[in-house]
Amino acid sequence: MFTLVTGAAGFIGYHVATALLQRGNRVIGIDNLCDYYDVGLKRARLAQLSRFTGFDFAEIDIADREAVEALIDRYPDFDTIVHFAAQAGVRYSLTNPYTYVKSNVMGQVVILEAARRLPRLRHLVYASSSSVYGANATLPFAVTDRVDHPISLYASTKRAGELIVHTYSHLWGLPATGLRFFTVYGPWGRPDMAAYLFADAIVAGRPIRVFNQGQMQRDFTYIDDIVAGVLVAADRPPAPDATGVRHALYNLGNHRAENLMDFVSALETAFGRKVLLAFEPMQPGDVPATFADIEPARRDLGFEPKTSIAAGIPKFVAWYKDYHGVT
Image (cartoon, rainbow, N blue to C red; front, side, top):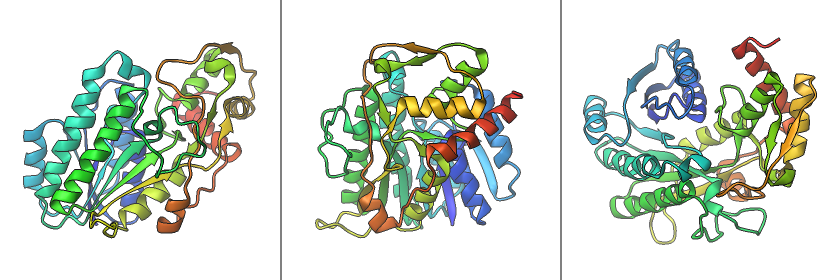
């Protein structure tokens, strides 16, 4: 397998690229190394990837048509694209909307146009998000649910990305699979997400900001389970659906709606420190609960998450302490 991984310096992209390299695949990674969060962490991930002889990296913005086209001209033999580059974050989208449209809409089209030019491409796998479900009150969230009422611009752009891919699959026969990720955490995680934010607060002795007065549930999913799902999805291009379109969507989650305060307690135990709490109202664009229906992924991909927060949080904390030199 010769794979292009976009967002290779990102959290999930880094882990997927590592897993592909470990099984002997050749990987070209691209990333624009934006400063949405610490670029040093992204460079540290790339340093880990550079240890593999089968890895090459190019600093490219996926919305840069000329740069992406030049890359495709240089490497015309890609058989798989794992497209995870995107502007992430619900709250950031409230103040930086143009960034989301550029990366998540224009960038999606640029990558799809590149995919059309690859004669040996057998599959494009791309990242979507549980955010597309908006304020859906029916739990668990199923891929058959209506997703036409997003409540953040981030969610809107991720849903737009799904629709654009479907169109390309319909028009050009592109085999593609979209994966709706549910609150992924683990080593090398994103500093803007709950596990990392809470860990930073615990170490600094600051109160943890707990929204909606703590009345939140999340389908926290450990990174190793996500990677396993991505790899099997990449290996299995979808068959044509009833209309002949080779485009599939799956939820990848832990299939557990965990109470946020249980997640906080697991961090407290792993750090061995008392947690300070600052309860706050619900934030704009946020939702009170997420919960993944993973039956289609189980049926088609054999996806079976194995890691509870009781097992996953100590692994994250061990990495966090090592990376930051915390005793």
